[in-house]
Image: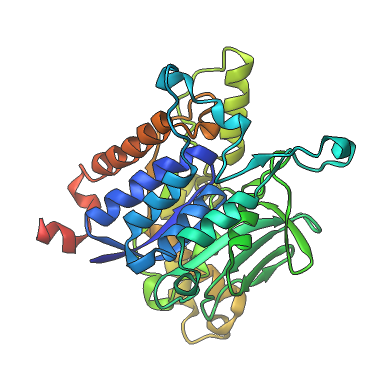
Amino acid sequence: MTKIALILQGGGALGAFEFGVVAKLVEMGFEPTAVAGVSIGAINAAAIAGARGGDIIDSLGAVWDAITLPQLPLIPPSQQANLSLLGNPNFWLSRTDYLNMFHWNSLCTTAPMLQTLATHLDFDQLNRPEHIRLAVTATDLHNGGLTTFSNYLADEAHTRAGKHQATRTVLTPAHVVASGSLPPGFPATGIEGRQYWDGGLFSNTPIDALLNLLNPDEIANLPIYVVDLFPTDDQPAPANLVEVTTRASALQYENRFWAEYGGDAGLSGFVDMLDQLDGMAKGTDMANNTAFAWLMRLRAMKNLHVIASAPAVNGGDHDFSKYGVQDRFAAGQEAVIKHFEQPDRLPAALREAA
C-alpha cells in the first residue's frame, strides 16, 4: 500500500464525487494516513477514519446509502434532484415548530446526521491517530475564525494564528456535523459552550488543517490529494439567475491556494524559495524559530495533486437522489483514472507493481 494524505472539500451532495475518488484510490492500492475535511468532506473524512474493520469503501458506501434518497416510481430519475429540499431523513429534517417561526435561526435540524454517524462509524477507532490522523474544520460564530478539531497535532503544528485555532480533542459526531452546519438551512452546532457553522464559510480547502497532521518525515514526499469540487476555469458567463447562483457558490468555495502562494512564480517557485531559505537557515537561530518551522512545513505543498470534478450542475449540491449520487460517484472514479493516465503521476511503488 502507498500512503497518501487527503484534503476533502465541502459541497453537499457533490461529496459523492469524493466518495468515487477515494474508493478508486483505495482500489488502486493507496492508503490514507492523514485526512482533513470540511462540511460533506468532513463526513467523508470521518467515514474513512472511522471505517469499521478498516474497510474504507464499505464505510463510505454505508454512509452514502443512508443519505441517498430512494428512487420514486413514476418520476424520471433525472427529475428527482430537488426532492431533498423536502428533507433527507438520515441527514436533516425540516422544522415543524411553526408557532415559533419568528424565533427560528435555521430551517432544518441536523439531528438525523448525528445518529447516522454514530450508527455507521467507529468513533473509538476514529480517535486513534495511529490508525488515521483526522481533522475537520468549522467556523466559530463568536469570533468569525476557523477552528480545526483533530485527533492529532504534529509537534510543530500551527495551533493559533489570530482567530484561527487548531485543537486536539476527542472527536464526536457533533464535531463532524459542526463542520457542515451551513446556514440558514442548518443550525449552528454547539461544542463546549461555543457555536459553530460550516467550515467552508471560512475556507473550503483545509490545507492548514492537513499540514498540522503531518510528521516531519512526511513533509518531503507524502503525496497529498486534493479533491476539487468547484473548478471554475474556462466557464461561460451565467445566462440566467439559476446559473448565477450556481456560479456564485462555485466562486465562494473554489480552491484558492494557487493564488495564495508564489505569485507569478507559482506554487513550485514558492516551494523552491522555501528550500533555499531552509539551506540558508541551517546552523542559525532562525532554524529554531516557531514561525520559521511553520513556513518550512509549507514545503509539503509541492506534493499536492488535484483531482477535479466537472463544474457543478445547477442544484447539484442538494441532489441526493439515487441517480445523482451514482452519477457523481462514477464521475469521481473516472476522474482518478484520467488523472493517472499520465504515468509520471503514479508513485514509483505502484508503477513497479503495474
